[in-house]
Image (tube, rainbow, N blue to C red; front, side):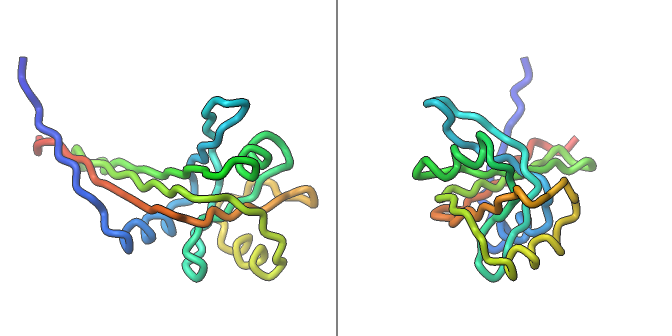
Length: 140
């Protein structure tokens, strides 16, 4: 059996923020009834506040995010031309945002326009930890 080496390299915080800003789809991890659940979310990275923001309806995801001390948010990607990938993880607390000017900025930057209506709530993840890493194997 052939052993394949794998390498992990930390991504600097500034590059983690660049990847968050370039990405439009991530996953929010919350605790629901004592168990972890993961939800896809169309997010925006606010470079001014240095936080992840996204819209939600008033259901499970919103309540779980606001009623637990921490949430996790992750984005990742693969490089098609090489056997490499990357992942960025944000851990922090979620809070609801009602500032119309901020919400207007975020709406204007969304690439994927999943429906947002009058019942939309906007959440911000205030990061306590932002980490990233690249994973690679041997060149083919």
